[in-house]
Amino acid sequence: MLDGPAANEYERVPFNSLPLSRQTLDAVQHMGFETMTEVQARTIPPLLAGKDVLGAARTGSGKTIAFLVPSVEMLHSLRFKPANGTGVVIISPTRELALQILGVVKDLMAGHSQTFGIVMGGANRKAEADKLVKGVNLLVATPGRLLDHLQNTKGFVFKNLKALVIDEADRILEVGFEEEMKQIIKILPNENRQSMLFSATQTTKVTDLARISLRTGPLYINVDQQKDTSTAEFLEQGYVVCDSDQRFLLLFTFLKRNLKKKVIVFFSSCNSVSYHAELLNYIDVPVLDLHGKQKQQKRTNTFFEFCNAQSGILLCTDVAARGLDIPKVDWIIQFDPPDDPRDYIHRVGRTARAGKAGKSLLFLLPSELGFLRFLKVAKVPLNEYQFPQRKVADVQRQLESLISKNHYLNTTARDGYRSYLQAYASYSLKKIFDVNKLDLAKVGKAFGFSVPPKVNISVGSIKPKKVDDSDDEDVPVKAQKVDDGEVKKAYYRNRGDKGGGRKHKGRA
Image (cartoon, rainbow, N blue to C red; front, side):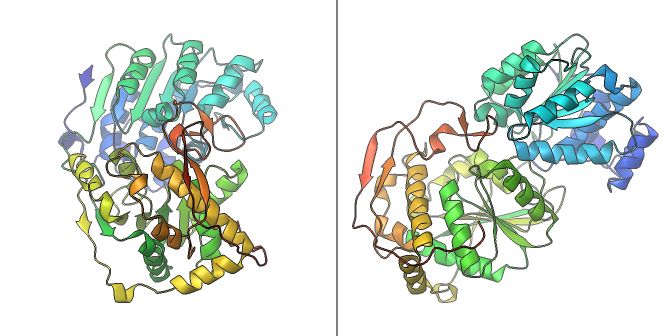
C-alpha cells in the first residue's frame, strides 16, 4: 500500500489548479469553495488519475467533496447517459448521511447532463426501482436497500459501473452491515472499477473490507497521522462534573442561556430524547428532536429544519453523530456520555468543521471521571468547566409537580428513566459506567420523580446483530443499545408513581 505525499505539500491549493471540466469548476465556485482542504488536496489528484484510495480523515475534513469531484468528472469524461445505467455507486451508513451526500451531488452536478438519485430504507421502493430502470448514473445508497435492488430489481443496469465509494466504512460495519457489504461487492462488477474507501477509524474489519473492495496497491491517505489531537483544531472542549439529581437543572440552565445559539444535545436512548423534547417544549424551551424510532420523513424534515436554522436546539441520539454536515453549530452537549472515545470524537465532529470554531461540553458523574483517562489516550484534550451552584436554576420542585400532574409527561418520563438505565447497563466500560452504583433516587429526580418509579430493565450483553431503529431494514442501531433485549433481568423496584392529569398535546 502506498502512502500519499506529505501534508504540507498541499496547503491552500486552489480548485482551479485541477484539470476539471468547466461545469464542475463553476459548481465548486458557486458552492463557495476556492481552495481545497488537506484531504481534498491529497485525494482528488490521485483519484482523477484513476488510483484506488483508502482515506482516513477526521469528520469535517471535506472528504465528501474529495470523492464526489472525481466521481462526477469520471461520468462527464465518459459521457454517461441514462441508457448506460449506473456508473458510480456511493454507499453510506445512514439515511441522513445519504441525503446529505445527495444534496452536495445536486449542487455539484447542476451543470452536468448526467442523472443522479438515491435508494434508502424507508423510501418508496417501487418509485426507486422505476428510476433505476430509467437510468441513474450516480447512485447514493444505504447498504440494505442497495443490496435489495441489486438482487431483485429487473432492469437495473449496473454492468457499466466505473467507481465505488464506501463512505464512513467503520460506521457501516459497526451497525451490522458486514455481510451485506460482502454481498454487494461480490455482485458489483470489479473489472476496470475504481474504488474509494473512507473511514474515520481504521479497524481490522475496515482493513478486511478494503482488501476485498480495493485493487492491489491502493493509495493510503491519512491526514490525521501527524496531528496532536484527534478532534478539530478550533474546537474548545470541556467537561462538567455533577450529581445525577443536578444534571437536568444544569442542562436547563445552559439551554435557557443559549437560546440564540445552535446547539446539539446527545442522549443515550430514543425514549430519553422523546421525554426531554416533550418536557422542554412544554416549558417554553423550543427544541427539535431526532432519533431512530421516528419515521424517515419526520427525521428528514427535522434534519433539514435544523440545518437551515440560524439558531436552535436539537436533541438526538447517535443516529446524528456520524458524517452529517450541519452548518454553524456552536455547541455540542454530551448530556449522556458515550461508551467509547471514538463515539465522543464523532459527536463533537458536528461542530468546528472546515476551520470554523466550536465548543463542546461533556456531562460526567463523579463516578465517571475515569472516562477522562480513555479520552486522554485518544488524544482528546478537555478542561474542567465550573458552574456555580447559585447560578443553576432551582426548578426541581416545579419539575416534580409537573411530572406528577401531567399524565403524558409522567409516562414519557418513566420510559426515559427506564431507557436511561438500560443504556447505562449496556455500557462496555463497566468499571466506569456501573449501573449498580447509580443513586436511583437522584437519577429519578433528574427525570422529575420525587420517588423513582418501579421499572423492569434488561441488563447484559446481546449478540451483535442488525437491529432496525425504525420501520425499514436500513439504519440499524447498536444491538446493545436497544430498549428490549433477550438478556438477564434486573429489577429496580421502588414505589410506583400515581401521576394523573391531562395528556400534553404539544409537538413530538
